[in-house]
Image 1 (cartoon, rainbow, N blue to C red):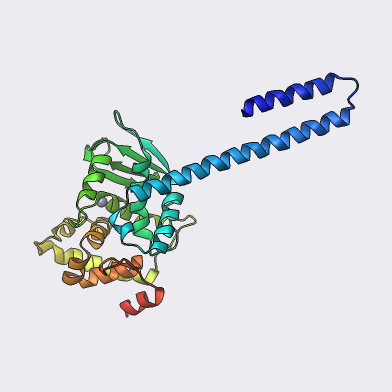
Image 2 (cartoon, rainbow, N blue to C red):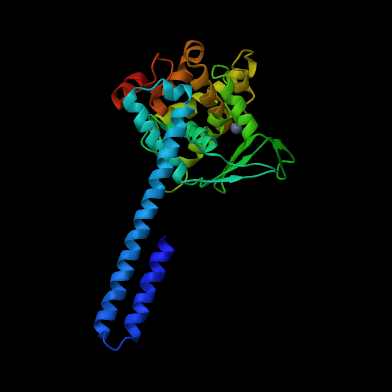
Length: 291
Ligand SMILES: [Zn+2]
């Protein structure tokens, strides 16, 4: 339709240009008018396309809601949806591996993980990590010479095995969630990268968390419990990512058995999933908890 419109207008312009009865200023004016109308039509088409995309993303999230989303109030759900949409629009999702195809549902589920983690904080989209690579299953890392189910690397990539990502969503109370784990790595790294999102975590809470995780890393060496994955964490980054999984999937147990870890993370992420409804803490209550 747009092409037909352009051809017709172009034919009129050519006719005007060759016609001796049409003065040149009028031809120039018509050409300028054509250019402006063309830009406007293109803008409206782009706008309609992006509105359709946004509608599709919102509908997909509502059709495939995560337990976290379902636990939010109606107002919070709308805010959550907006963040999920913005996250997706800022990322490039790339299918890797044989037969892999990235669907809207996949994008929405991945974005929902990132937004869950950052929902208590200002809007964050991990801007350093522009590309999300999706493999159908575990993939071979030529750097580490082994199969991986996910990773976040400083070249701006978040990599996920879709099978493992979905396995993490089957049981939301087992403390295992690949999506939350990798997004926690992205959050931790993004906080230290000098860009527009740099240094977003409260410095005092982060200092508390770092001190605590160093001490807990030592203590967990001897612990044999559901939290034993924490003891396997080789460094502070891994400890944080595993603790985030436990924080969202076993919040009550974590709060009961390791209140220091729970409270420190609640302060850092400004939310408290152990409460019956997901509670986004105000800064004041977060300050109160730390004192
Ligand atoms: Zn990890």
